Image 1 (cartoon, rainbow, N blue to C red):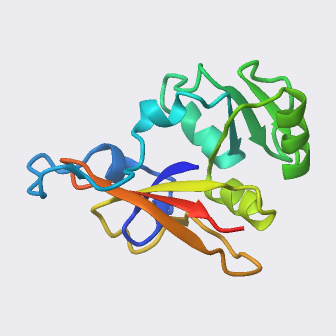
Image 2: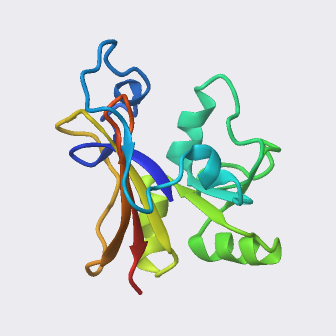
Length: 178
């Protein structure tokens, strides 16, 4: 997974807005960007070997508001029990993690990228996440849509590296302990 959150762990505000992420302050006064040991990859490096993207309905519906389709290079799977399969030829609709995994296996997926708090949580519950890259924007929202939802147990992580950007984003990469 590769996702951005606020410092307090929200992936969107309560209305699903991302302006806090896409429109940072004009005059940032942050420490100059740097990379720590084994720093997380940037977007291009992260997606270089990704063949498939699995996202939830809410994430998919948010992406549709962008005015462009940013995921043309991926085979996109949307998990939903509410969307109608076949309405958008860019995506395949599945109704469960199990069906998404069957499709990933059938299509010999190299690396699957997960997006959306509920999807990420459901894959974590089943032990199906190897690494997490979490970028934290320098903002506290106070409320919003959380990255992680209720998990049945703690999920231990090993810190692999951290970097920062000139806009104040802190990017941290973890390996999930199985």
